[in-house]
Image 1: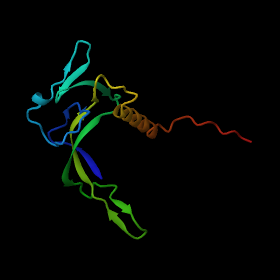
Image 2: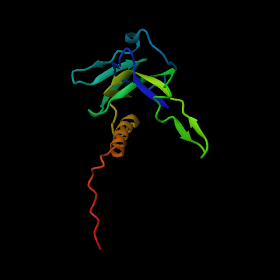
Image 3: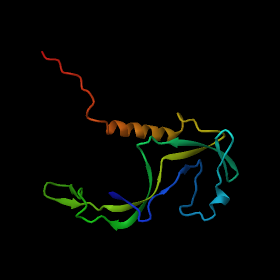
Image 4: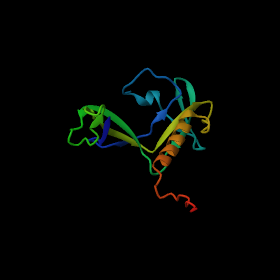
Length: 156
């Protein structure tokens, strides 16, 4: 399990970019401008060239009550006194303490840019666009208010 906490430096505002490419690198890129320099044209459309390929960006903006987070999992554990969900019942007689790691929130965002080849993505066909839309719909349904009117039961 993870416990999300604010980073000591605070969360930086960022915009994640989902590229139609597989990159075999996981770490910082020190000369970002050399490899990634998106531009916006007169019509407000985002364009970029990555490894010689022309990409078109489509922003997916989250509703105002949602925020994305960039998390960095640390080696620190949440102290047992703060861990309210620390026990999982395996058997009737045994219980096991769940290890809860601390994840620091180092970035936050309210939109994601999905990049596609040969034009802007079709939001109804793109797996990321549909995933965001379906996830938000699922979250809304899951956390819907209990105040939803229920049909009155008819008396016999």
